[in-house]
Structures are given as structure tokens and as C-alpha cells.
Amino acid sequence: AVIVKTKMMATNISRLTLLPLLHLLLLSPITSSKTWNAIKSTTAFIPSKNLLTTTTTSKHDDLHHHLVSSFQKHSTSSSLFSKPSYQDYANEGGIYKPFATYAWEKIQQNKQFLQLNTQNQNIPNELQFNSSPAKGGNAPEGTCVQISVQSLLPSPEKKSVMRMARFALLETLTPSSSSGDKMECVTNAIHVLNLVLFPNPNLVSLSLPILGIDLVTLPGGKHLVAIDFQPILPLSEQQQQQQQQQDEEETIKREILPSKYNMHQEALSKLHSQYCLCENTTLPWGGDIPPAAQRFFSPYAVWTRLSGDDGLNVLKNDVWDVFVDYLDLYIDLMKEVVVQQQNDDDDDEIKQQQNTAIQNGHTDYLNYRRANDPARPMLRSLYGEEWTERLIEGVLFPMLSFSNE
Image (tube, rainbow, N blue to C red):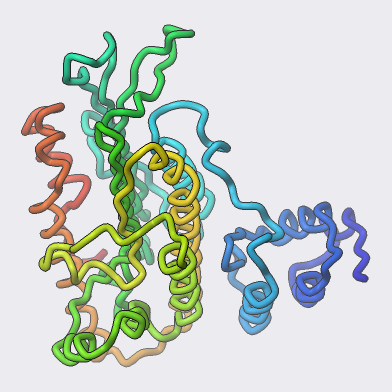
């Protein structure tokens, strides 16, 4: 048994002294909830289902990684820290408002570590919000389709591991029957969340994936879900030949992260297997992906179509769990990149060659998304062509400058 006085832990134990103690506590089956609360408040831990990382960088990286590995080894699905649920955030708004709220709170909590400090600097005021009356004869009076857009950017004077985090949330709402001041969700209508976290393409020699999340609900109870760590480099000819020779299970092993982040790729693979490859999965593969888009889908993509009476319930439970786990893991990855970058000693010439390919990959991704945005016709119908093109071209998928980012 490990007995710790909670008050002493919260006030008097230094972080260095606490790390070995935490290792013991992780192995102890009787650690109390009060003790864990004290640990979290003392060490500023940010928990996720598969990884536990600290929000501070210290000289004691070996202890840090040992602690992370220990937590992964000994944690189970009944985690010491409970995962937030959809209902925890379902106070108001449309179907995907809880998703957007959770994601933005999580990113805001980590914005200093992710070096994202400037909000909405790239979004003109008139593009941050818009509203249009809902189209269709069956919509109750006052029903509208609203869109809100938010972004976080690094400070101009700093070179961040992140280029931008942003979301666009579209909701169909109607005046509340119980309170005229509030708007209620119209579930059998259009709802969309597009959330993207862009790594910095000028982060020399690191081919990091983009976190791309698209959640779409259409009239008639149809839902489309795409959540992925999206690679930006195309497969080489040799990799393409190898992939053609491998079966589906082996293809899953394709690396999408630099080797120094194997721990994160292993965690991602386990999440994908847990949610998509199990026998009783509620998230079956959604069908063929257009050839031009295949290079931007990883083997760990969650791509599914939902419908029927249970579709909305799956969204609020299983899709929510995937969303939280993938987002948390991506933030953990980027925080680790910050630490690793401080010790980067790669060859400059090799780094420059790799960086050119990475920048080209980001440009290809943005060009594809701009040219093939499936929301363009709907947005034009609701908000007009000029407003829509300014949003897509200048805010959602803007052109890049590779001078001094």
C-alpha cells in the first residue's frame, strides 16, 4: 500500500521528487481519487485514454518517458481518469456543438505548449459568423442555418510546431418552444463540423500528419464521419509496390509518423483496431475513396456512414469516443514534437531536401481541399458565392507562404 498525505502532495512535493513517487502510484491498485486529484493539480498533467504526458519540459526526459510508458502499460479501459461524455457538453446548439466545444477547450488548455496564442487573426469579422433562413417548406418559422468559424495561430514572432488550429461549425436551429430566447437543435437537418489542426510545414525534416475531422449530418438521418491523421507525402513508387503486395492487415503497418514517434503511432494503431477492426464495430468502412484523395488517408482513418434510428446514438457515443481519443492523441503528439525539436541535430542539407517535399505536400493538400470542398454548393446556396469563396479560399484552406513561417 502506498499512503500519501494529499495536502503535502498538493503543496510541498517538487516535480522532480514526485516523478518516482508517481511511478509507484501508477502501479498501486488502491490509489484514492483524492490522491489522483492532488497529483493532477501538482504536476499539471493532461490525461488521455492512451497516453499521459506532462505540460512541462524538464531536463529529466528519461523519467518522463519512463512514466509515460508505465502508465500505458498498466492502464486499462477503466482508466483512472474518466473520459468526458457527449452529454457533458450537450447544453445547447446543434448535433456537433459538443464536439466543437470539447475540442476548442482542449486546444485552449494546451495553446501555450502548442504555441498557439493568437485568436481569429486570419478571419475577418464578417467571416466569423453567418446565418441564413432554413430552406424547405417543412421548416418551422424562425429556423435558421448558422455557421461559426474560429482559429488559433502562433504568435508572428515565433516559429511554432503548429501553423493553425481551426473549426467551422454549421448548425440548423429553431426557436425553442419553451423559451423564445433560446434556439433548439433540428436533428433531421444539415449539421457539419470541420476541424483541422495543421502542423507547421516549415518545421524542417518532420513529415507530420494533419489532424482532419469532418462530421456531417444530412436530412433523412444520414451521417458521414471522417477522422484521421492525414499524411501529406505521397507514397513512393517502392512503397506503392509494397502496398500492392501486402494484404489489408499488413498495410495497416505503414508508418505515417517519423520513427522517433513510434509510441504515438502504436497508440493510434490500437485505437483504430479498437474502434474499427473489432468484430462488433459500429463504425464499418464507409466505402471507396476517390483516387485523388487516397494519398491523404492514412491506414488509421475512421471513415464511416451511419443511418437509421441508431445512427444518432452511435454519433453521440462511439463517434464521440473516437473523436476525443484521436484529438487527445494528436495533441499529445504535438507536445512531444515540441520537446524533441529542442534536441534536433539532423543534418542541415538533408533537412532542407525533406522540407521541400513536406511543403509541396501541404500545398497539394490545400489545393485538393479547396478544389473539392463538398460543402461549397450548400454554402453558396445559404450565404452567397462571394462569401463562400472568401471563406474557403482565405480562411479554411488558405494558400501558404514559405518565407519565414
